[in-house]
Amino acid sequence: MYPLSKKIKIGKQATVEKDHFSNDEIIPSATVQFTCCDCNHKNVVEIFPYESGFPIIQMHREERVLSKSQLLDNKIVAETSEGRRHFGDLTVKDLPTLYFGTDCQNCYSKYFCVFSYGEWQPGLTLLLVSGVWKYEELE
Image (tube, rainbow, N blue to C red; front, side, top):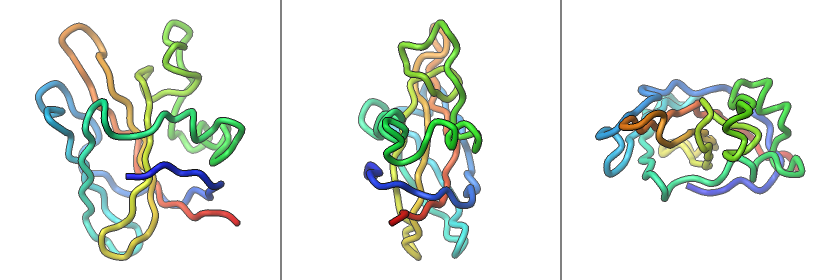
């Protein structure tokens, strides 16, 4: 897992086996499987709550990697509801939202994953994967 620091072009969205995890499914981590768009290899990424990922604002701050409109237009995130703005302007299901870069374990195509994690209601903690997208760095 790594942060993205250069502008990117969003490619195809990879197929994700399971995109929502709750309570015990998150302990100690959530195992996310996605299929590479190029070679069809099934990749496995473990997301550890409070350890994995980087704040989504790092992607769109000063449009360093992507703009807010690119994130919204591609349905990667949504605008945060008024009562949850302390989590940032853009979130997945109004929960704290993070991202990370990863590579296909077979052909090394580049991907980024966006997910949210937090307590949805008392006694229900969720980890929701918005998706995994192939990307190319722009010069």
